[in-house]
Image 1 (cartoon, rainbow, N blue to C red):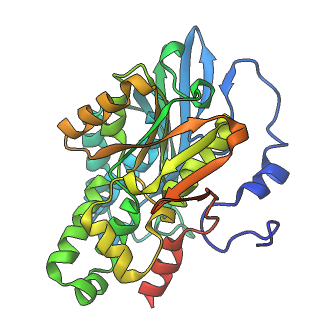
Image 2 (tube, rainbow, N blue to C red):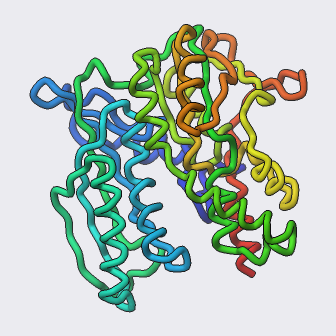
Length: 346
């Protein structure tokens, strides 16, 4: 792959960031605890003795989901990235640049969902901007910043990872790929596997959040790092986390939980589910003596999870074991979701 060529769709690749973005980050500030880096979903600053975690994302609305459901997804996309800091999410700043065709009723339905999720998770909206503009179009109808606040001692991040820590993974691979495609293209799923299959796959939509996973994980001091496996899925997330923390990995792929509907989706549509976007899959680096307890707590709350590997010295590299065969764990670079979505749209 030509690393200087930008991808047609999806996130900009790390090499471009290393060359263009990261060398130009404004002035240096000693109160920045965690700044921009690959494999970390949030930044953290120190203010008045507390740590403030911040994350910004597009506000993503797909009308075909229904505006209530679309807003639920948009809210969780925004707050998952800051929840993995280990600090409790507290505030939302939101910019809505809405398409002219969006009606008053649709805006109200969307905003009611944002309000309800905010109340559920103890979050306050503190500022924003709302307007309809020519040139704005779905699904990117603005942007939002999530803010979490807490003691610096409660902050999780790559600086806390240690050799011997275990890797816990929840829900399994391709959560977002399965949930989105089944809702957007139901006929494809029905023709491939029947109506029951389509319904089961569409139900995965409601798993596309790690907020509840993080609430449970925050109760365990031994949870050192958390990451939501979005672009390029579990393999991309593991790779980026290891690079951010400067450690090695040994992962047992066969131990990663795989829900039957996820496996069936990958088999029918012939894609690598471990490389596919998976909003809702939490990857956690956990002290060895708390890893099994975390998995038990997750399962007691209806969230499947498993211990799937461990951190090893950086000199040992990144290794993954599949069917008993060990090989190098590499970044997938290209997420299969985008090609699937393009193909299904034809």
